[in-house]
Image (cartoon, rainbow, N blue to C red):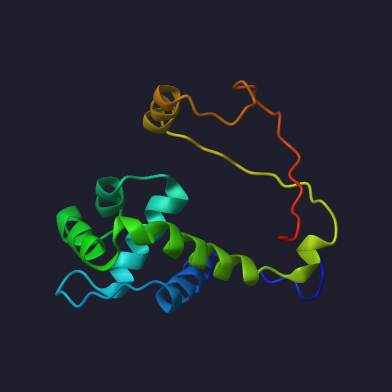
Length: 147
């Protein structure tokens, strides 16, 4: 392992993502139970775990009711703004990746755990990972610098 390779923990990753998203998302909440940090935590849970808003609120301790979170989100981000906000956040997070990642293609191992609900949802939508459900077969992923 290289000397400059950081040791990454769940708490460090969450803290980093939370800080970056708070700096770049136009979200603010000052409720007694729903704060800006709570909104970010719910969004991170939804996107990283493939959860619905309701599932994320149920999974996070002391989370506000999903309708409260939905209300804050709907007040502050319109449907028309979603693509722009998503692109901006993705560009910000992408820009934080070390430049050494772009030097050559990498073999990446991903542990994908899906619940029955997620699998059923993917089947209904015709989505999948393209490995025909075979165990132990991964895909080679080449990371390339954006053009």
